[in-house]
Amino acid sequence: MDTFLFIVCAIVSVGCAVNLVLQKHPISSALSLIGVMGSLAVLYLLLGAEFIAMAQMIVYGGAVMVLFIFVIMLLNAGTEKTSAKSWFAQIAGFPLLSAFVALLAFLIKVVLPPLHPVEFGSWVGGTAEAIGMLLFTKYLLPFEVTSVLILIAIIGAVVLARKEID
View (cartoon, rainbow, N blue to C red):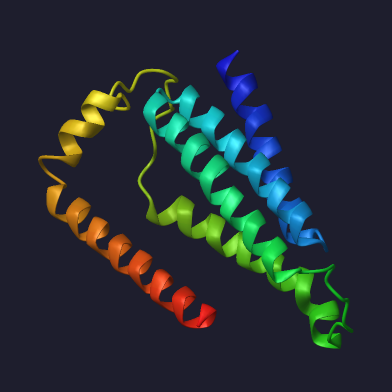
């Protein structure tokens, strides 16, 4: 059952990602991104990372997507206008993409060591307690640096927004 659910969520994730790129309207692209985030959250659940799955849905599927939609509507972005494709892209695009994918597959097969199969639910490090212990012991300095950078970004956004009002 886990393998079937993994395959379904992987297909949904890749399908929504392809749809995200192919859409002409930015709101449709944002909705496809929500589909990607939701299917990735289910994949995290399958791997036993419950906290990361819920953070994925709350932070990215919720807050970040609301911000994206707000910015798209604020900019009043319309549908994308099509342009003429270059002749080189039309002729060599698919063969070059196929060669690149084959090269990546070859390098992954040769360079990376053989991987062990994934056992769904066997990892128990995804709880809130385990992540909290790592975050506030081993990774305390990067956490605090990230907090300061986010604070600087917020102050910068407030200053920029305040100048435009005046």
